[in-house]
Image 1 (cartoon, one colour):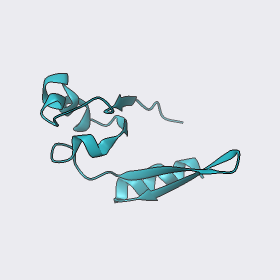
Image 2 (spheres, helix red, strand yellow; image 1 turned 180 degrees about the vertical axis):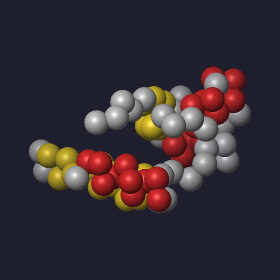
Image 3 (tube, helix red, strand yellow; image 1 turned 45 degrees about the vertical axis):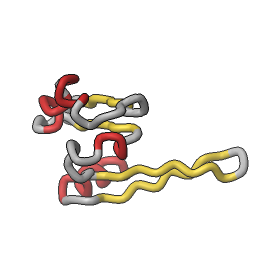
Length: 82
C-alpha cells in the first residue's frame, strides 16, 4: 500500500474563514495529502467542495458513519476503504 499523508484540521473555533489563510491551510489543500476537516462549515467560502463528506450519527449507544463521495478522487479514496 502506498504511503498516504493525512492532515487534520478542527475548525470549531474559527470565527472567520480568512483565519485559515493565516494558518497555512491552503498549502495542504493543493497537495496530494488527505485533509480531514471537522466543522468545515466554519471555513465556508475558503474551502473547496469536499471529495468525501463524512457524517456521524448517534444511534442508541453506537454511532453510524455515512461517507459520500463528492468527486472522482473521493470515489477512489472510498474504494480503498472497502
